[in-house]
Amino acid sequence: MARDKWMGAVGVVVVLCYLVPYTLLSNVVAWYGSFLFWSGAGVVVIALNIFMTRPFKEHDRD
Image 1 (tube, rainbow, N blue to C red):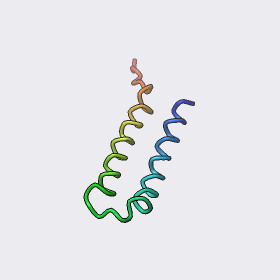
Image 2: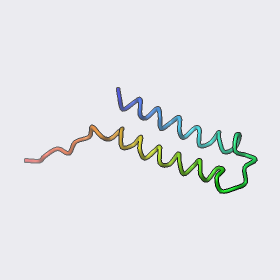
Image 3: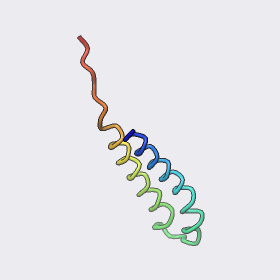
Image 4: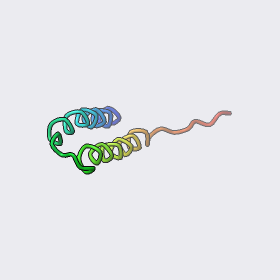
């Protein structure tokens, strides 16, 4: 169940990656516009993936 929460958060970030640059940042033409937002969103998605896969364990083979 906890993994579903993290997957939902990734989904929200993906939706924001479409909405924010084309709505709120549409008039910003400098590097700190969409590029900075997408860079930050990429870091957030990487962090969410770390939290999502943290409980995974490697099984020993006998």
